[in-house]
Length: 357
Image 1 (tube, rainbow, N blue to C red):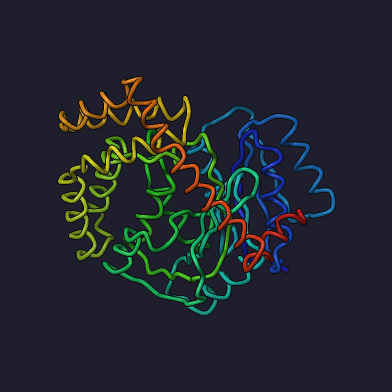
Image 2 (cartoon, rainbow, N blue to C red):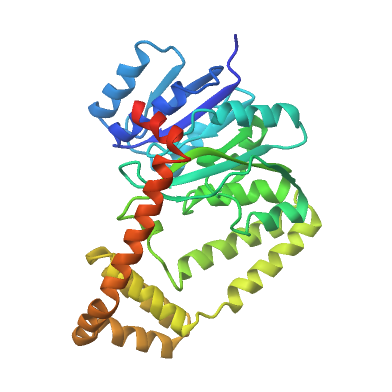
């Protein structure tokens, strides 16, 4: 029987997390698949994990680059390898819900007009503890044109390819992208897809997305000039893409104007700086300094001066910790209790499945 789905897993030096990701694919309720690992010259530990699992499962394909070629080049290599009707791309630190492929394949099989389907995610920490979720309704919604492009900006659907299944045809989009110097190639790819193709959103848990405590994605950034610049370049790219419907191309102008007209609220910026200062230690302090510089370079001199004064005042830091430290600690404790209750309650079956791995 020919495989219908390929799970692409690019990896670099995360052997234990890779094992978890691989098992989440191999133990799917849907079995007509192959698992392709693209190792960016990690070394023996990663190779041992792959070999240990491939001994008893011939669905695993393994490619190890002789040298580290970078994330984007590794992604490109993986995309070009797809030879099945459907494929997904899974981060080596993420993992899938047991019925992900069964649910996603059913949607694509029954709806040939759509090119990809999006499912919900659980956000977890490095220890697989729930830290964020989107409640599932099992509702299937279809999007196209401007409506679909706007929905990708709404914040209502997950924007990570970990919980998406694609048709092979969309690999050409990645091949068209000049990704040599880009950051966040996944987001660029997804917005390009949404600008051209119809897609569906199934409100059902499909994957677990890991948020690392030291990662930039865990920080709250009041102003992010790099992100704004990258986004504008991507909108410009879509605007000049003749294969994109005119109504979507026109919509990119709206989003560019929105980015250029954005002005941070002083009180909101202070709250976010205080949040980062309390929640994060040295990593947070470094990022806070970058945030303050972003305000300054963006032309918000008064805001940057006030934030700089707050950040560099030892007395004020002590006052902030005394005034807000307990409040944030209690808030985080309540959130953790709620997440743990959900993890042991209505979402128990998902996390029991993870523990089996």
